Image 1 (cartoon, rainbow, N blue to C red):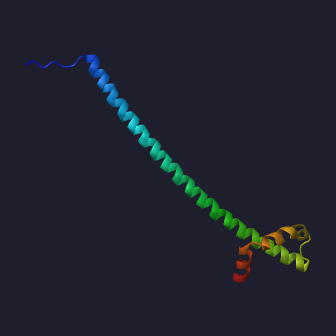
Image 2: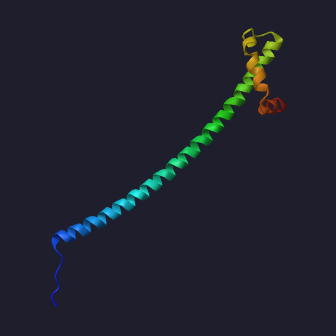
Image 3: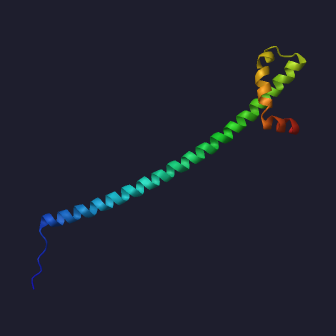
Length: 102
């Protein structure tokens, strides 16, 4: 029995189909990996931003409390313009926490 090899064009076609499947599979894998990486970056960014924002609000409330004290004692004329912001910030729960700790 004589074994005949497939024609060259058919071999090229088989090789092309196999390499296309591997490329498609690796492309899907890369898309899944990049999506996972993007989700991880988004979650960490939101966490960092929320921490930074809360830290900013705490510092702002401390500053406004100082301004309010200056306004009451008459040491700061500019504090009269910030009176409304101080009143609004007092409604926040952590301005009460700051007063208890200091």
